[in-house]
Length: 190
Image 1 (tube, rainbow, N blue to C red):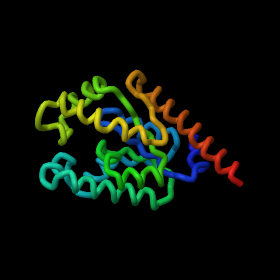
Image 2 (image 1 turned 180 degrees about the vertical axis):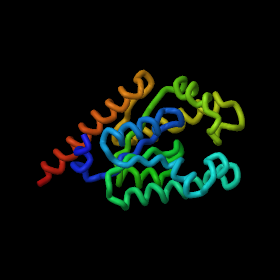
Image 3 (image 1 turned 135 degrees about the horizontal axis):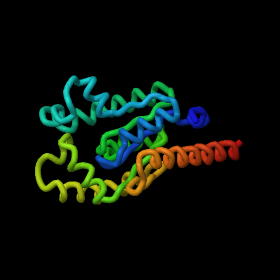
Image 4 (image 1 turned 30 degrees about the vertical axis):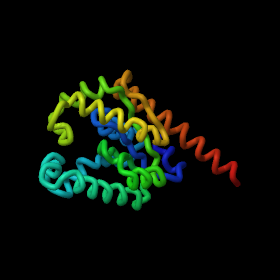
């Protein structure tokens, strides 16, 4: 299975989506199956800054997180080595970062309906953007505002009815098909 990424011009797979859709768990599983490095941008930000995402968000605001995440993404792209990136939920919202990802990585959006996202998010207390106000309303507004952006990904996977292993397999199947079509297009151009 690890042989599918070398067949692609783009070496980095980037998972995007709302909080709670499983980007970290699924990304880690994909990286393991492909035998490539896994980078979770939230974890990398915390290592660089020596503070939690919540602490950074509270003291420096979301711009500091965006700045660090952008550097991590750029670095992963420049390495030209196969890897899987799991990004923060706001990453694909930023026009410049979204274009960088779309032009240099294989973007995979994990999509889930509001009710699934809400159930998953309220279980975790580490969502700084949701700490103030009506969580249900905030999440609903975010899902409505971002779903169309996430659909700009190379691959979109609906994750609501699948377990972890099914989702990983579904992503790998879609990835294999995407790379195969991309290679066929390049071959047909010659």
